[in-house]
Length: 256
Length: 354
Image 1 (cartoon, rainbow over the protein chains, first blue to last red):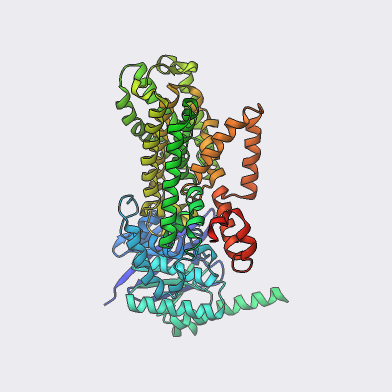
Image 2 (tube, rainbow over the protein chains, first blue to last red):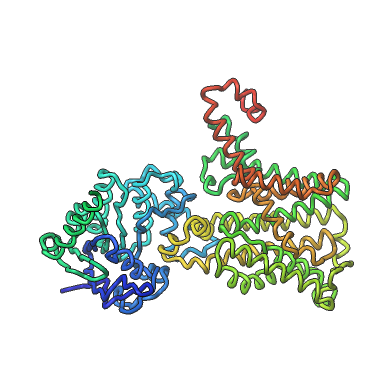
């Protein structure tokens, strides 16, 4: 019954003498929203960079839909159906909103070397539909770099959706957002995952978001998996509580 | 809107509009197209009626617009500051000149082959240079152009060395200045139309996106390196074509056109005119060519003046003349409803008020 779309096996990444990711195993079921949490420095970002191909693993395997993709270039992994939305807002500043999404459609349809046809017009028309879905319908002609922070995050998700990903990787999708913007993005993630059947792997600091929308939660600490389970199970897991309480205690000491 | 569109659009089309603005209203698009046709007609009429010497200068300026627009494909739209496009300009010029000197290619064959030689040369050079980024890319392309310069200068048996190649390499029917002007203008018009198509194609959109944020584009599954290389090769193709037109103008080819300063010229033109607009480099080419032509009569240090202007543009108006015009239009539009009387007095709006 289990249908694993993304599986990470024994993944290790060293930076000099420092082991940022230490024999991590992770299995993401198709169509689920899977969160990775952990205190700062737990190795979440490194793990995500290994999965997207920005970093090469020192050891271990990454299997995406039956293909081993560990150590492949980012654009190759993206064409295999795994798309990343970056932690920091990262739009193409001088493109319009509609062009940004059309870019994703053009990439997905392998029309990027097309210099002959008027395909970008058709792509732009398709982009409008996606923009409606993420709530940017009225902003098609706006220059992406001038959007608000929240709208830029929504645009990034729209760009990722344009290439019809199997797995959407979100690195702290609500970082730096107001509570209202956070609610909108969280709602967007859930609706896209449920209606399109997209698998979502996300890392997140906002625990309300994590426990509110995730099907499964993996907890990382010092580069290792502490536990994995349903949000309810993870929330009351003694080791997790120790890590987070210890973390909070450490922080209040610093403040004092 | 419609009341002011033809006038605003006329200036905008000549001085260039941002590629993203190509989706304007129908009225402004028609206005821009009309202005473009008017501009081309003006240049052609001038080329045919001017005295032969002046027509020849205009012909040279027209051929340089192609060099500038072709360079700007990777500069303004690709974000790659190359100081090596002169290599391909030189390949184009030397293809025609050496084909004649070694009696291996006739004029027509050489003109047809020149852009392809440039494109082929761009493949290994681009593969190497594009391994680096930003300043290192600029320095590497600059080094390559100096290397090409040294080869042209030292391989005397092959290239004629320092003196270059001079002679009757252009067929007699092309020696009449008005005919050669028309020949050049026709080729440049077709070439620029093709480059327009490239910039406004899906490939052009990908290129602009890479310029803005290469990691993002890569995350969408695009091989950034391959697309940059493709743009580099297309640029080289048209730089070479411009170089072959240099021979039509000068009936010669010599190492100086390969010097790295010669590679800087189309970059300066694009920056002056506005590298984020398609037609900006066309304006820049005319401004640069006629300004240097005019300045040289007054001062030996004309390059100093050009340098100062360039510095001012980079510091104050990085988007060049076209960008300044865009800001002016936006400013006028903001003021118009409030201070219609004042603005109506400005010459830009003279035709706008009935």
